[in-house]
Length: 199
Image (cartoon, rainbow, N blue to C red; front, side):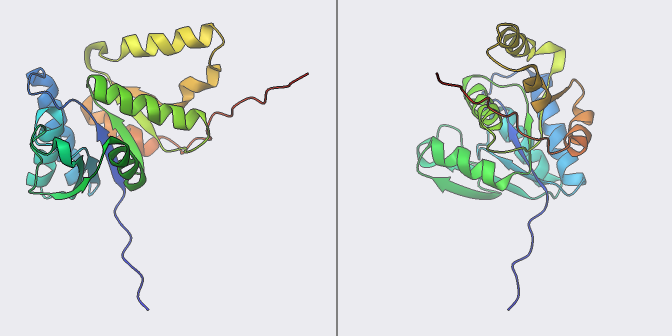
């Protein structure tokens, strides 16, 4: 009996779906799609055809790359599902995030808003809980994510997170460095949750 072919190494991209995103961010997202295609890396993303999300997927597809979009049915019109690539339509946001997580070997976090924040915080929370050890790298142009990193540092100073938490993710400020950083990041051990000693 023949076994099914192994899927290519896959990077999930979290990023903005807004068409109002700054042009330089849209251009960077498109460049990352080209890079993934050129390196034979499959793009896994949220399935839309707008904003940074659409720019990345369209560029990867146009460059001959493999792309998998995952989108809830209720967003297919709002986010203009990019049906020129393989697209899985799911029932809700929870299924979307889980499918994207399962299909990915690593995660690239580009600039985004509330939806992107929700995705990456959940991903980091799962790492904190020891549920995965997949590489996570932020693309941080002009310090876009610095306020989030400052919040992490505050939580560490207040001893609400261990200092080791900041080893769970990496950061680059050059889109050309993003894929090499993902590839170089070891599948680090999840940050362990301390056992609570009860009297």
